[in-house]
View 1 (cartoon, rainbow, N blue to C red):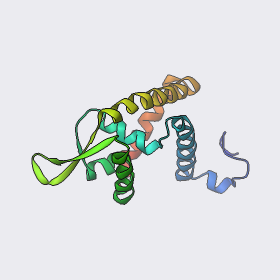
View 2 (view 1 turned 180 degrees about the horizontal axis):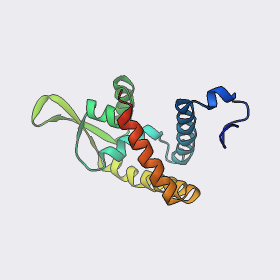
View 3 (view 1 turned 90 degrees about the vertical axis):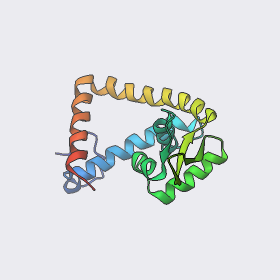
View 4 (view 1 turned 45 degrees about the vertical axis):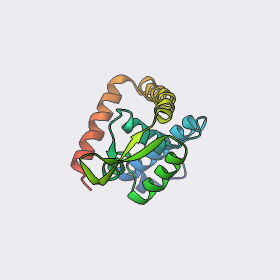
Length: 151
């Protein structure tokens, strides 16, 4: 028996693989989040960058790439567009002039506030649909999975 929510055209053997189920869940969540953020003209990855930089602390490219789950070349291209749009800027690290830190601008922080509302709404939908106990358990299991499956 296929797990609930698996598309009918997916064969049973692949639906038994946890990595496949995680990939499908990620795809569904990502596409839904994309729809929510489309009204702001940004992608999910833009939200991740602004969410991480919202503490107003700069991040190195390496730190940011790891935290937003992107490779360096893709992040660099995206940040170039975000700089051009006035959402972030790059400054030399005051403690190490060889490093560059990415910071959110006031305009980026303003956009972040709007994006946070969409993210909070979607997060609340999850909690409402699945229930707080299941969400807490899911978070715990995902955190454990992340810890147990290093890159």
